[in-house]
Structures are given as structure tokens and as C-alpha cells.
Length: 279
Image (cartoon, rainbow, N blue to C red):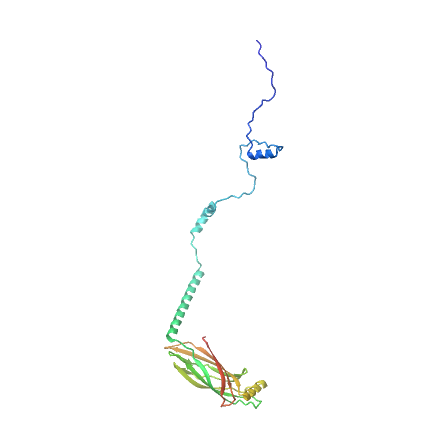
């Protein structure tokens, strides 16, 4: 009995492939663009895709950046974190000097405040009581040698402070910037709460007057107001209890006028300014 032979089918076997339904976005694209070709999904490779060569930014949490140093810097970080701040020798000396200076100034200010409250110091005042003039001849064109006798009144209003008038004082008389005569104060001690009146003699020698100064003096005599400026400088020491201070220079500048240039001259207006040089 012969076997039944079937005809050979050379066509490749048909395989059935299940297709996944397209996502909703693709369905919408196909609905709007029916003629657009469909992209066939390639086979998925099992190996991970290698990134292209280049520079990448690695994001690290901020707390790890500050708290966890790199391994190569861990020892250095630990050594620096344990190191104590060191101050230089010059910085320490400067701090000690400033502290000492501040303490010294504070003690000086405190002592000055205590002395002021205990002794209540007041500034002495001075005034010009009288001026007599001789030897000032304006009729002659030659040099002149005038003499001024100035009566000065010094008042010490302090109840617990005396004043020593030392050597080296000066009293000068000027007219329009020209020194007419010079002299000095006597050396004496003025007791506390005391008024002293003294006369000082001022002399000038061979003074050449310009025609302008001579004319101004003549006009002043005719008007009865001849202006002069008196500058007084007196080094003094104040006695506070049993202690003497250092030398302090008392400065007095007075502007005054006289009616004539004789021994019987009378003063008109006068104004004085006072000052002190502590050093």
C-alpha cells in the first residue's frame, strides 16, 4: 500500500505577532494624521547604553559637602579643626598697651574730677586801671623813646588756690602794629581770694615812626581817642593745698584808648580777652 504524498509547501510559515495597542497619544496622532508612517520599535538590547564621553555634573546633597571631606583631605581637615587660633606677640603687646592707656586716662580723668569738685577752681581776671605816657613827642621827626606806666589789677577769686607769678613775663604796648614799649611783671605770690594792684613800667628805645603812623597818632590826639593794644603774658604756678602745678602761661590782650599822650592821660574804652596755655 502506497503512502499518500502531500504537495510541498515552500512558502515560509506564517507567524502570528501580537501587537500592543498604541498609547492614547499615538492614537490621537493617527486620528489627526492618518497618512503618517508608523515607527517600528527596534529590538531592545540587553546591554545598558553607554553615555557619550564628556564632562558631567554630579549632584551631592549640601550637608554632605560641608560635613564629609574628600578622603584625601580628611586628615588635613581634622588637623585644622583641632588647631587653636594663635595670636602674634605684637598683637598681645598692642592689646596690653591699649588697656593700660585706657586705664591711665580713666584714672587721670577721675582724679581731675575729684580735684575740681573739692577745690572749685576759677580763672583769675585782669584789668587795666590806668595808663600814663611820657616821651612820646610827635612834633619831632626823629626817633622816639616813649615810656608807659600801666596799672594792672589782678583778681584771684579762688578760696583754696594761690598763684605764683614766675620770671619770664612780658608786657608789650602796640599802636597800629608798631611796638611802642615793652616790660615785665614783678615776681610775687598772690594769696587765695586776693586782689593785687601793681604798676609796671614799659619802655621803648629809638623807635622810628612812619609818616602814616605819626599822622594817625596826631589825628587821634586831636579827636581825644588814641588807640593802643596791650599784650600780657605771665607764666604762673597754681598752689593747690601744698602742691604746686607746672608752669601755665596766662594771656591777656586788651584794646584801650586814651585821650592824650601825657602822664595825665585818661582811658576811654577798654576791652580785654583772657586765655591760658596749659603747656
